[in-house]
Length: 427
Image (cartoon, rainbow, N blue to C red):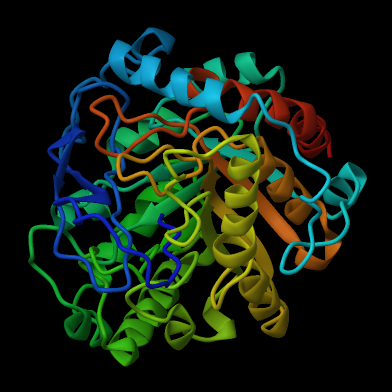
């Protein structure tokens, strides 16, 4: 998921853990990621498997799923929460000043909420593999969501091919599944060239069969998501093999009887280790162009120690103009890229972010406003957008949760997005 703008700003030493590199054997404990490329900002772990500590199960006769529920919600530790609230108190005494007009790279006009609903934009959330957690989020938000985002367990090929724990959790729920599918397992038993030669097609055929049997025949599949980051097993300089392998996976899964999947070619926003544009596999195997776009900028953040309210507003706007929306590979670029290929744009992951290294905007309601403007602008033709509503309990991946960590952004989110969510679920 990372927004990783390119710039010459000094960066902290990259931590040993990758944003999406969670262990398949323990979804609550991040696994070690590979060394990141020079263009990467530090990434973070993503949870996989059911909420709580029950690990994803390998194929075979499954044990009864572990119970889940709102009481198992991950919370910030007291010290982290106090630090976050202290920062919030400093930043958001301010409101947007008169000089903070959306000029330059920032869109100049807000589109109406009706534009998003009439264009069919759907809205979702990531709340781990837990229907109870999603229901609790809906209660907090005051409306329903249409889509749920989830991630495959990926330590072994069997994990990838048969995510029974996940299928059990989402079966007979009203949500459409947006599913991040690993191209290679983290145990090292695969490579892109072999995948390009069709040597792993049986695993994706089995996955497609299991999805269909589990009632997820219409899932949106993010195959090899964020491949332009360096810390994924499927990240590589070999763009030709990557594209051939992606095509094999899509063709294999589409051929399974009953399959009605859509495929979201999903990049990480900003400049990264690899230029994602070189990895586009062809219009015939792509249904959406997806972008994971967080409030992250190595150019604009961290905030200076002496930053006052006007300074915070200035840095947040710079992050948007030069990293999130602007820049060589920001949302403006990807919106045009999707249009050129006749595809709708998606935002499978987005959110505010307080990062341990300081290069996230933290509680930033202006980012929420700007994302609303972007999503509701008909020019961008956004098909769906899913907020990443998750805080890492150990602090290693930072915080995103509007409900638990960012009251100013939460208030702005509810003000702007609740009408969109309601329009989405009623249409």
